[in-house]
Image (cartoon, rainbow, N blue to C red; front, side):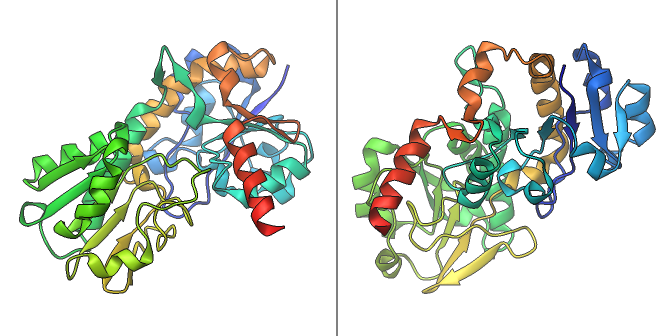
Length: 324
């Protein structure tokens, strides 16, 4: 039977956690679990709370010796150089976008279980996290914009869970909002200059060679406009977008303010942690015994250093051809 270690993410302002003491009872073999010392402090839980729940507490080095390692922002993990080969890594991986992480995982023959691929009865397991991405991005970005949403005309691109969250906040604060679905992308490109704020919530096809917004489009936008890039896909749908952090969330290109924090749900770290812990804990035993539940199978995007995710395979193949 395997062991599982939960590490504290070193991502900027990342306080989401994947296990809370009250949910340890959902795991049958919790004696095989170890959390990093101070794991729950950001949420008000002490190490003793975890011990009372039957979970071991240890220093980071001991946690990284576990067979399976859970890191909420796995794609930004800084501990891969410290790992022995052949680990199983669990969390939000985003292996298409996080190329350095993907290369390191392949080289060390790791297995990667990507949370973003877990569906339960047709619905994304952590759907509230996606909604919160839209909600928190809008709230945070407007705090740097200098205008209230009810004074703005806003275009939301996308119609998934992230867009739904963005709309909840925008509509609640009185913004004049239009939604552009995937089929309406040509219409958006025609009318993007009509808006003060553009909110990108699309899940971009990484094999596409075109863009949603080119740098040359920025001169078409209204003076003092803002792009809120919730999707945060560098070098893909928005040419001028690059991931930012909570400490330095905005930058300006050609007079257009850009907001692109790539872990915005961390603002609502208590809400997200409660969902993560409650929803993922029932899957932990299957990882411990090495027999993943069916819902986890699509989440194995890399196995033993071999990429299984078709989107990642296609993207890397196209990138290699372009570089050749």
